[in-house]
Length: 441
Image (cartoon, rainbow, N blue to C red; front, side, top):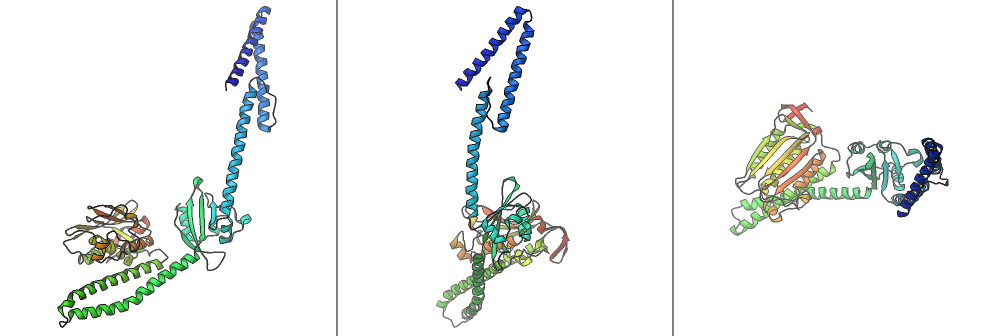
């Protein structure tokens, strides 16, 4: 740096010295400014020539002999060129490594541009989607994946929501697709073979459904005998408490089997819930009336339903959602507490809220409360007859309606369970007929 500055100062001093000498000669001849102008024009022409040589070197790469400071400029450009070439080689090496690594993945990967056209695929994706790289690159991925949910997911820029489709390459194989949005409005499709997982999940669902169904008959017989023994006056008084406990446990098992069957039925339904108009105000009144019978201890149920707002969905499944949320709120609300069921507008859609002033839920438990058999307070849940499946049923039913469950809670202050339904599931200003809503979206 110091050396370059000293060279620049030396060239400047030389230029000024030349100008002084020319001016002195011109003064001697009587034309100082004419001589100085000629000197300046010669220097300018020299500089333009040197600049042209530098430009030719930059464009062609052929090194030129440069003077008057242009050699320093050329040295700077040359050093930066070398650094850029080195950086480019490193980036190219990393890209080759990333491409080779992605090509060796067992999961398929498809890179799409902003119009969902295929830019790059790895070997696994070629095999799973039965693609011809030379011919199919540049084609829209929807030409090969003709599933409406995949197209909808791409259009909504949704991430990390796995969809299961049939394989084009091999009949009977199932593929799981996940879409991820990248920079530049691109998308990455990750494809994996989920055939074995889906078969195992189907076997699990079948086992749960069949076992639950088969256990209902013997359980009904046991409950019948227990009821008969409790009503028999000849039964010794010492058996009253054991019989009452056996009745409570058989009732709890009956509730568990009912919830298992409900959950198994929801798991078997792959399509979204039907779009049947439901008068939510009437539904809240009916379900809350049924729940009041179990709301002992002076617990009060309050209804706040916005008129002229109906829901498009499956009525039995919505009843399952509301009844499970109310049952959960009753179980964890102290005597004399208040439970409120609301149906109100929310953003572009509507929300079904169940609020209580109960014991609340710790923040660490909230992410897990919709897991099957997960209980916040195991002792209280067993005492109140809970099965640990209610919120799992709520989550499954809401997913079929395109809705989400949000939970907010404070310890000793209560909880709010919010079921948020999208706008396409809501009917505004309906015409109410009976307990059904017929209206215009």
